[in-house]
Amino acid sequence: MASGLSCPTRDGRISRTGCAFCDTRGSASFHSSPPASPSGSTNIREELLCQLPSIRARFGAGKFLAYFQSYTNTYGSAAALAVIYEQALSVPGISGLCIGTRPDCLNSEVLGVLRTFSERTYVSLELGIQSFDDSTLTWLKRGHDRATSLDALKRLALFAPSVHVCVHLIFGAPTDSATTARDTALLLNRFPLKGVKLHQLMILESTELGRRWKEAPFPTLSLQEYGEHVLEFIENLSPNVYLERLCASATQKQACLAPLWSCERWAPHNYLREFLVSRGCQQGSKIQPSDLTRIPFDENEKE
Ligand code: SF4
Image (tube, rainbow, N blue to C red; front, side, top):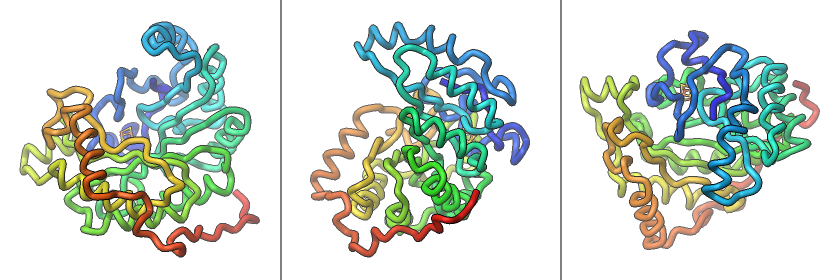
């Protein structure tokens, strides 16, 4: 679902075109409403009350997380965010929050809201870092740099330590280096994050990348090439971090321009699992104990 908030790459603060890979639905896997207003959607509670019965019937579940997936769900004032999150938690059966956001939308007031909610319920922050390479971030038109992501990870650890941080990454940009997957894992090992979601670079219709790709097609990863990146990443990733996703799939097949294996949901996932097993993949097998040394944070630092 969407909070109704926009993104700094959509409302003009950074740009109006969105990140280069993102379509107009704001990276949603499911249906979501477009941004409503700077203060967010007015009725999260009603939307959830409307959706939950069918989800309950389908999965037989009794407890749910409200997943604010589309757009930037911390891009608002602290007061507006508190109202949105509170509305979601007021719905019977909602037991926690999953909040998708960007590293440059976590100011001290926002961290304060996240900390407060995380001290009373489960809060997962789905942090779209995508890459630590500044050249790739520029190519993806993310509008933030590596330093901003490192700062966000550090400040989350210091000032909102109960928040469950799950980092989103994209592999496969032409600007990635041969060691991007390894370097990314080794860097993440130095922060107390909980999870990672991996995503292949996908070219979708109605995106800046789609436009560029049609003008001058550039290579995207075959499933096997992507598997090599995933293997390298996992073998260098701390076993304390769990993988929430190995690859993504295009929600609307007809909108996917490349790589076409992204149109399938389970076949790539199953291929990757078998590929990792066939290569004897063990999470963290390539790391040394010193690779797990945490970046020293100044506990006395004030927000
Ligand atoms: S990728 Fe995220 S921040 Fe970028 S335009 Fe899409 S929803 Fe907004």
